[in-house]
Image (spheres, rainbow, N blue to C red):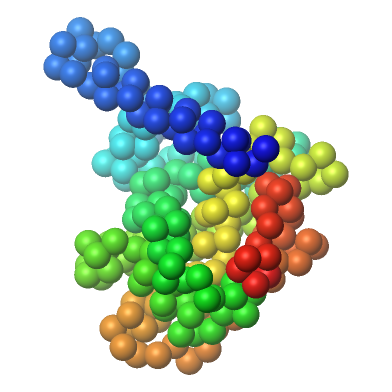
Length: 253
């Protein structure tokens, strides 16, 4: 069942991408048809969750935010406020999941999350809940593409986005009750939450310090320590993993 769910999710993503590409031809651009018109930063800062989720159905939304820092900041701040202040689990989960998705898809963090699959052979021997300072360096180096690994600014931008997304995943996991996830696709959420938690174990008094330390480790300066994530069912991360029906046994968890 989970395998089919994943296949359907991938198929849906493919269809959406194809649709966006179809409307990106000059003919449709000239006619102004089929293209998403992302509103101003001011409008995005007060948009409802349903409005933002509607915009996010198009890849053009993420591209626009990636190219416009003001709009990206407005969306992230709006969603952070919604998941921090709402008492409705569905709103908290929806806002937190979308906030994390925005942070990932507008930076190299998305490449890191997706790269875990491509790096399956390199990380096969790593136990996620017993990772060492050497393991996390190997993990990140195997998952990220060369263009990010070789550029300090791009690398740190990706790590900082992932660490900020980790806060959203914590809110998401904390809000999960007996009914499980409420209208949130578990595929990207569980992948992102796991990778974010793994990176968060890097030592540092701030997200910037963690990013600096991980970059230094990739340049040959060993991390002084590392704290492996807690996958226990009573933790936010464990709640997300359980709600998604994921078995981490093959990773030693």
